[in-house]
Amino acid sequence: AMTEEDIETKRAALAKASRKTVYVISGVSGQGVQPLLHELMKLVEKQTAREAA
Image: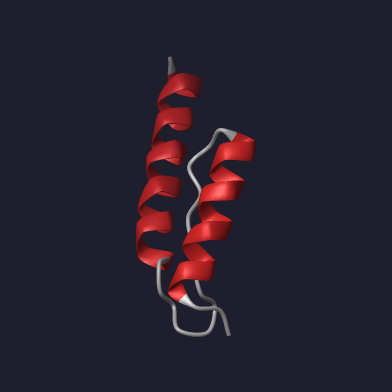
């Protein structure tokens, strides 16, 4: 298991390297999954609108 500090350090490093938003999720506890799903839904809706135009 990782500490909250370790998680944030790795998240920040990945975000800096990728220049993208990095979502921290846990498959075991489900933590962080809902915010990620909401963002995915926004992307799907945006793409659907583009294809319909």
